[in-house]
Amino acid sequence: MTFQNRLKNPNTLIRTGLLFLILGSLSRWVHPSANFSANFIDGATGCFYGVSIACMLLGVRLNARRGSGICATLPRSGSQ
Image 1 (spheres, rainbow, N blue to C red):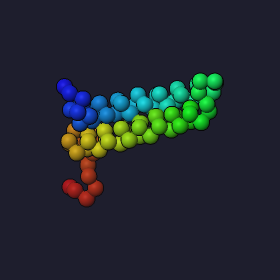
Image 2: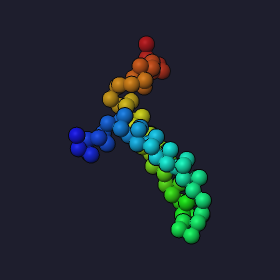
Image 3: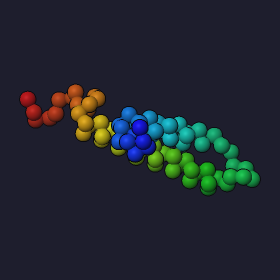
Image 4: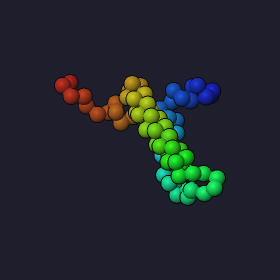
């Protein structure tokens, strides 16, 4: 499976989002030192959280469009 095809898989996108969420959470534990300034660490943390949110939202959207998963099993409002 190529990288482009994997990006179309909702489960892969959600897992990638969760990975970046973990990286963002762990980056808060890095202390500023001579190698990394506090601003760089804050920027990296924000970038990790942003990629995490984007990946998870895309994964949920693709999952709903495919008609698989929990989004497809919930009844839609107005339909009977």
